[in-house]
Length: 257
Ligand code: ZN
Ligand code: FE
Image (cartoon, rainbow, N blue to C red; front, side, top):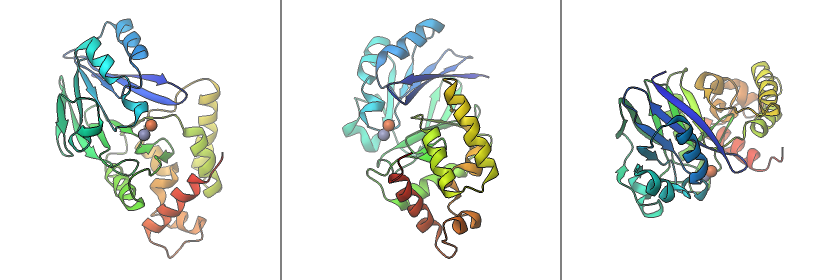
């Protein structure tokens, strides 16, 4: 693949990513909890970080940015709306902008909900979507700043992307998310199979990222709030899609899996 993506696990459950454009050698790092593991992965491949892309301002995504930028000279890109609470940016972007990593073009997508000013990056040619803490494997981020309506709109924007889109999210929460999903839709056979495979992957120390949008549509409860089968699973046949999403988010907040 022309855009080679390396998963870098961090802390207890964070992921950062390194995305390397083979044609040009340009290399983007997506979120930087701390610089060490990224620098080791870059050195192991003899890659040089040319860009740092930030999804949102939380410390577990940005604490290592200044050190990595100082060590590599990488060009730091983040949301203009959050420039006041992100590390110093070389380029402040807005939803609809395109970021260029060598030959790869990434679309900046507005994904408020977990925070306001949260952005995602979609690279259509590589089918790679870096979602931070918006859409996650089998789940979505907690609503620290945004409303359920904002997150539901966010998920709608992401669901409009192709089925083959690969979702690279900011955390490894899939096993807990899957256990929660099963409490809501115990009769979803695709979900049962996927929950088992997630347990196997995690037991073997593997990563559940990337997941495809097709898999997410079939099993992620938050993407299924508009479906009649989800509404009847919750006994909310006549409720609006947003009311169903809101109920799911609130149940997940209280879930101790
Ligand atoms: Zn966060
Ligand atoms: Fe986070």
